[in-house]
Image (cartoon, rainbow, N blue to C red):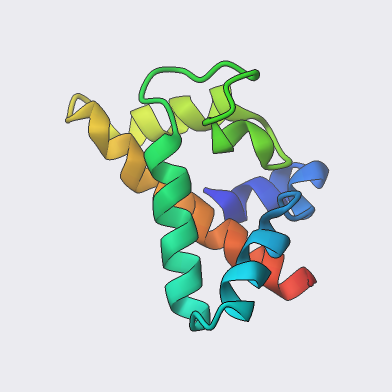
Length: 108
């Protein structure tokens, strides 16, 4: 989803603010690159609301990443999940954040 966003929306070509710093702190503390990415993605995905996020929700990482916004990302996730467990949205967000982490590391 993040790759498509970057193709369609110019703002989505910018990395998420602060993500490179968060990853840099993990790496400086001795974490390996992949472990840092996985941990940050897991933590941020766990905070993402399962319902449509409000832009002011501090836990909604989908609103903090440049691009179409948290509502669009919520509906994309729901469309992919279908009538399945709403908790699967966090799997979508995890993969989304992994990609965002890769972008942030490339840009730093």
